[in-house]
Amino acid sequence: MILLPAIDLMGGEVVRLKRGLASEKTVYSPDPVAFAKKWEDSGADWLHLVDLDAAFSGEPKNLAAIEKICASVNIPCELGGGMRNFENVSAAFSCGVSRVILGTKACESPDYIAEMCAEFGGERIAVGIDANQGKVAVKGWTETTSTTASDLALIAQVAGVGTIIYTDIATDGMLAGPNYAELENLLKILECDLIASGGVSSAEDLRKLSKMPRLHGAIIGKALYDGRITGDLRKLIS
Figure 1 (cartoon, rainbow, N blue to C red):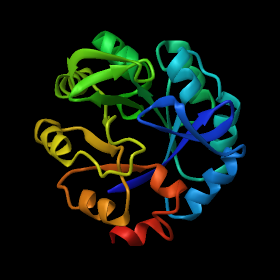
Figure 2 (tube, rainbow, N blue to C red):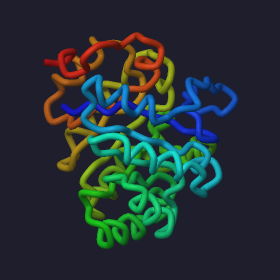
Figure 3 (cartoon, rainbow, N blue to C red):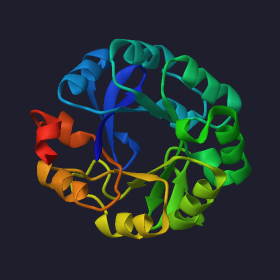
Figure 4 (cartoon, one colour):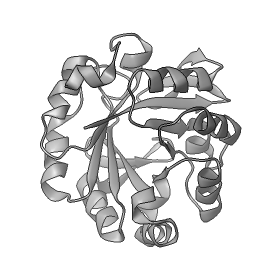
């Protein structure tokens, strides 16, 4: 299982939100490159970058910071937030990211998923599924749709994506533990890679996730920033 520390960006700063609420923002640093290097040195396999400004507005706002992060580390980076058209996806790849995460537009248009996979390759496209009580939330989690997480996961897989990233909104930033039951349900129906996001609160959570057959990766956020998970990340699950 790969480990992906998260770097969430607003106004060029490293922040964390509780349950995706902009009103519940904690600013950790004005220097995202420093955190990128720190997490790489801690044993990260990838970095999970999110342009939160773009997630809310639909337009990239932190590309300069993202380009600096990608240039400063030797591990691959993935980027989500505002990837709702070809221009934004292309701009993200131009900044040096290895994988782009589609969210809102993926839920709105299965054809868009297929088009991006055809253009850039399915291994470079992920679909981020952010679930609110089992239903997909979009536009920076400000709207909840009638589409279920499992339905969108299957649609994305058929469209050609290599990776699904599942986030349970109720657990994100709450240090309450991941939604293991929903992850198990998704693993039963998916053949592509699945990455868990949201709720990781301790090394024990990571060890439990690492024992789930076929789970490809885990994204770690607040637990790292609050010092609940420290040291060599690889040793925590070895």
